[in-house]
Amino acid sequence: MSNRAAVQKAHEDAVLSAALAEHNRAFGTALEVVSRPDPPDAVLSDGVRTTWLELTDAFFSDEWARDIVGHAAGEPHRPMRQGLYVGMDAQLADRFCNIVLQKAGKASYKPFVQQHGPGILVVGLESPWADGEDTVSAINQEWAARGNPDISGTFEHVYLGFRDNAGNHAVLWRSS
Image (tube, rainbow, N blue to C red; front, side):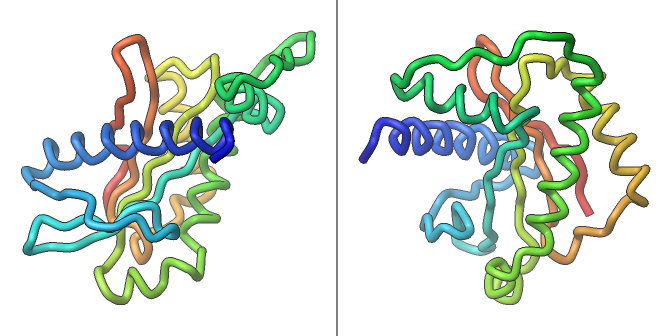
């Protein structure tokens, strides 16, 4: 396994763990990972109910996505372009909404939806400018501007994933 693949797996494992812990806490469940088929990233069960979970990230830019994963894998750091950066929450919100809609339309999830019902989507917010309330507000505004698309046929719950000095976290964004 390459360093990049190992970093990606460690990242996915940490985000999955945080999201699963938050989901179990929020809904009083005891779901555990029973398989990692890819796609989706995990099938979860508590012995009674089975569901599935998909992980993805919304990076504020492709350039930053390549660097953050590459740098963590020991590759040379590639600094961001110099210049003025504005509207960062709006840019991340646009990427978030695009990713959620793309994932909601993905045909490879259909067998899991048919077997287990709508699943759980966890979208990591990857931006050095993400700041909680302002970022979530921008996401909500962008989602509303797109007409509040109905993704409930694919995802029952969507979580926003983020990191801070205390580790990985997930918060429920919306449920259908």
